[in-house]
Image 1 (cartoon, rainbow, N blue to C red):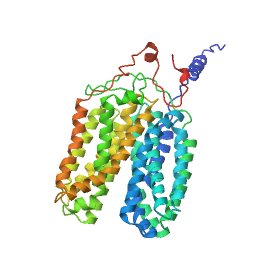
Image 2 (cartoon, rainbow, N blue to C red):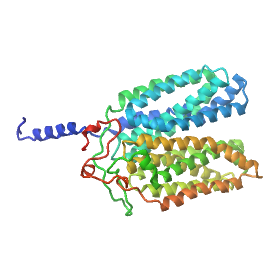
Image 3 (tube, one colour):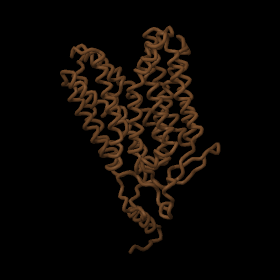
Image 4 (cartoon, rainbow, N blue to C red):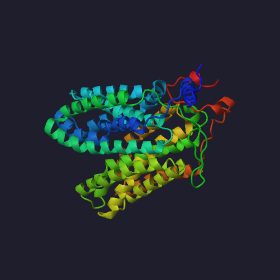
Length: 455
C-alpha cells in the first residue's frame, strides 16, 4: 500500500493504476496516426482508376486483348470490391485496424507482384479483382477507419489531414507511373508497386501505429456555434442493423454513393463531355489540375470544419456543389467556367468521403464502425462501376450530354432534401434503453477487452 510523500506521487500512481484497470490509454500523438494512415491511403493508388489507366493501353497491346474485354475485366474487379467490403469491415471490428492494415498491405503487395506475371484474360481479370479489392477497397477502408478509432478529440482535423496527404499521393502517382511504364514496361512497374507497398505499408502499420487504440473519454452532447446539435459520440455503441434503421445512415450512404456514381461518370467521360463544349483534349485533361487542387483543399478544410459544424449542414453544402457541377458540365466553355467546374467537382468528391469518415463514429460509436463503414464503402465502390455506362447510355439516346446531366443532377438534390428532413440519431438505439452503466461507460473501440465494461 503506497503512502503520499507530499509531492502527489501516490495520487499520480493511483490514477495510472485506475487507467490500467479500466483498459484506457491516452490518445497518441497525431503524427503516429496520420503518418501510417496517410501512407496507406496514398498507396491505394495502384488500385485507383487514374493509376490503372496508365497500364490499360500497354496491356491491350501486350496481351492482344480488345478494349471492351479489358474494360469488362476491370468492371468485374470493381464489383468484387463492393461485395467484399462489408465482410472486411467486420474483420476490422474483430481484430483491430493495426493488424488488419498490416495484413492488407502484405496481401496487396503480393497481388501486385503476381499481377506482373499475367498472360491472358483470366489472369488479368483475377489481377483486376485483387487490385481493386486490395487498393481501392480494403486499404482505403482500413486507413480511414484507423483514424476514426485512434483519434477522438480532433477527429475531423486528423481525417482531413490524412485525406489531403493521401489524395495528393494518389494524384501524383499516375504522372510518375506513366514515365516508368514507358521506360521499364508495365510488368516491371506493377512489380515495383508491389515492392513499395510491402516496404512501406506493413512497417508503418506495425512499427509506427500504436499497439492499442485509446478509449473515448466521454460521449456527451456538445454545443456548436450556431446552436446546432453536436456529439462527440453516442453513449452506447450502435450495431450495423441498428445504424441502418436511422435516417442519418442512409443520408450519408446515399451522399457517398451518389457522389461516387456521378463523379466517376463525369471523370471517365471528361474528354468527350468537355469536348462537346468546345474544349480540346488537352484543355479537358487540364481540368484535372484544379480538380486535384480543390480536392486537396476540401479534404483538409471540411475535415477541420467537421469539428465545429453539424454533419448535415456540410452534407447539404457538398451535395449542392455536386448538383451545380453536374448541371454546369453541360454548359461550360473554355476558360474560367471550365476551371470552376474542375474546382467544384474536386470539392465534392473529396469532401464527402472525409465527412463520411467523421460522421459515422460520432453518430454510432466505434465498436462496430468497421461493419458500418464497410457497407457504405461497398456502396461507394459499386456505384463507381455503374456511373460511366449510365452516362454513356444516356448520351447515346440523345444528341448531347445535357439531357442526361439534367437527370443526374437530381440525385444530389434528392440527398439534399433528405438531409434537411433527417434528424440526428439519439445517444442510444430506441429499442435499447440506457441503463445506469451505459451512462457511466463510454462507447468502446474495436479489439478492446470488453470484459472491463460495466454489466
